[in-house]
Every structure is written in structure tokens, then in C-alpha cells.
Image (cartoon, rainbow, N blue to C red):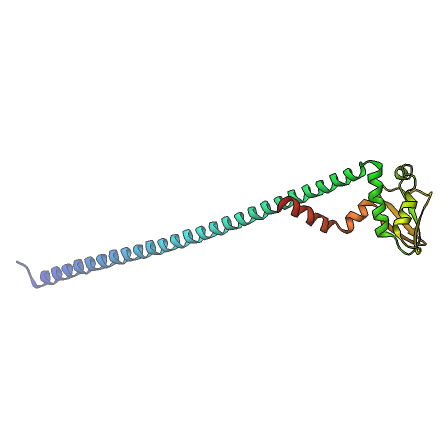
Length: 198
């Protein structure tokens, strides 16, 4: 027969079991909630990391495309510039290899355009000095149409490739083809560019 003490002990045991069951249930629920929160946070971090990585990849790709386009544009410009320089060099070679009369016709025009008031001494390279046509100076001076402008031929040759130098007292006017090209190279390149590429 169950005594009052046994009833009390059984009640305590039942209450304890119920309380333990409640604690375990609540603990399991809390663990599940913590796990769910952790998974949710991890998913958010994963999504954020993927978005960040995708953005970085897009930016890197955009930079790579821009760099490629810039390098391609620079390579094209360099190729065109090299080609233009080659055309100018070929033109210079062409002029230097013209028949003597045609070559000195060009020289005559340059002298007429470059002559100043006074008597200018013409200095040529040894090569050109030795092949100056007869009556060249007479023709140049007639073409100058001026009593104030006259040129004479200096026997002193200069170490130049082509063209000439006019000496006026202490002033030299450099009319070598290299000098003439260097002073107007941008204008010449622009004209060649227009002819070749536009």
C-alpha cells in the first residue's frame, strides 16, 4: 500500500521527469534555433562573399578589357607612326636619288625661299659640291629677283648628308633635309596620315 511519503516521492519524481523533459525540449529548440541562425548567417555571408567576388571579377574583367583596348589602340598608333616615318624616310631617299638636275631644282627652290638680304655663302656636302650643275648659281641669283639678295658658293664643304647651309656673317640657316623635316615633322606626318589613313 502506497504511503503518503511514496506519493510525495512519486510526485517529485514525476515533476522532475517533466521538468527535465521540458528543459531538454527547450534546449533542443534553442540548439535548433542557434543552428538555424548560424546557417542563415553563413548563407548571408556566403551570398555576400559570392556577390563581392563576382563584383571584383567584373571589375577585373572591365579593367583587363580597358587595358587591352588601350594597348591595342597604342599598338595601332605606333604601327601607323612607324609606317608614316618609313614613308617619310622613303621620300627622303627618293629625293636624294633623283637625277642631278631634278635634285638641284629642289635645292634652287629651297635657296630662293630661304635667302635673306645680303650675300649668303652656300655650303654643300662634298658629294653635292662636286656635282653642282653649271650656271646653277647664276640661275639662283636671277630667280632671287633682288639686288639685296645674292648667294655665292663657298669652297668649304660641310659634313652634311644633303641640302645646304646658307651662312650670313655669323648666322647659319640650316636647310639640310633632316633639319627641314625636324622643324615641320608634325605637319608632314599629319599630311601623310591624312593621305594614307583617311
